[in-house]
Length: 148
Image 1 (cartoon, rainbow, N blue to C red):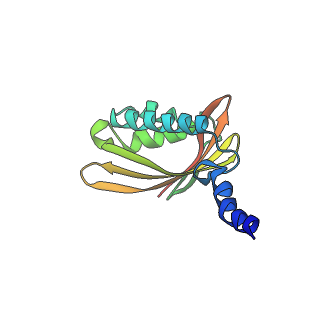
Image 2 (cartoon, rainbow, N blue to C red; image 1 turned 45 degrees about the vertical axis):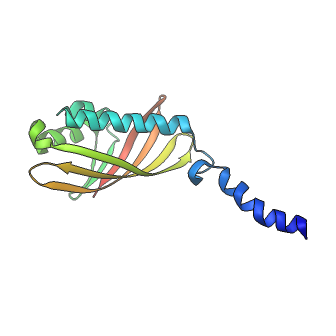
């Protein structure tokens, strides 16, 4: 009876302590830190009015997917143009705050990320980002972005 009671009490602790914050078997603290560093760099670039710097967090490929109200658009160059056309200068970009809410490591080279964002411009805007990040050529980049 003592053995059964011990298993009932200890097993859940062992089960949930296997993965930090229950992030999955592919979780890597090093990869998490690398992704968060890219996010921090993007926020800094945005707040400096540097659209090109902000875009460094995205996969520089014609296959980059951006899901917007208008539909799905493909390509790093088209996305850069969209941001430049929508936000002309630092003042128009406002001040970005971005908080990663959840990281789900799908495998060793793919992470599903949900973030909350706010931008202070003439009026405050905000919503969520849903992104697929992939490690491509040793670098974590956003390959798919859906912003609400």
